[in-house]
Length: 315
Image (cartoon, rainbow, N blue to C red):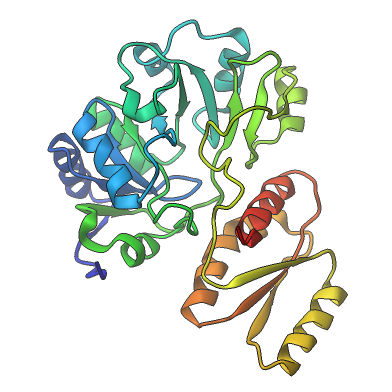
């Protein structure tokens, strides 16, 4: 369905938040801003609403969702047997771009977890969504507000372009500050495993929390673990430096192929913030190939490289 933009409301307006809360209580879907990307929210206590997410996104029902809460103390409503390392992480990084995977309790429905005994939870750091959760007095599940496997939205307009009127209300909170999805740490394993890289790095966690985190093993069990994801319509080609990228652009030009270079040098924060918007813009302008120069493999650069590799994967 094509967007009308009439469902985009100013998220800083109290009446807009009240409208979104009313929609969620009525089992409708609402798009919300976070510091990472925009989420497609459903009330976590409603199986009917949760199932709508899978239909609208075209998301496989076995692919688990992330539960969002307003504050750390809400963990006890949805989890059991919280390990010490999980407690250390949330005490240090919540609210913020970190998701933990922990043991679920009976309040979490199977639709959220894909039938698993674990649940992914985070506490977003965005005043609009925090206020929404406070007024709702419930948790929400909120995967990225786009079609499954495609480029995540970082503005309200991106959501409208993807989902149109299939979303009851889109709360406009401006462009997302970070621009990449949250770090996901599985705290049910020993040691904990990194399931998805994000703005909070394993090096930070080791230094600041004295918690060792290792690479993921086993099945895909969290958002973003599939080999192909975050994919635009254009092709993505990856290069290690600008000279290689310029050479490739010249080759493509001689072939009559439209292309452009994506390169932010060592500015990792700007790369993360701009990546999805630039890929979406390239599709809008019918660019055939985006030639991406890899950022350094440090800090959030690991997450950026991960997203680029999945976007470039032509499975």
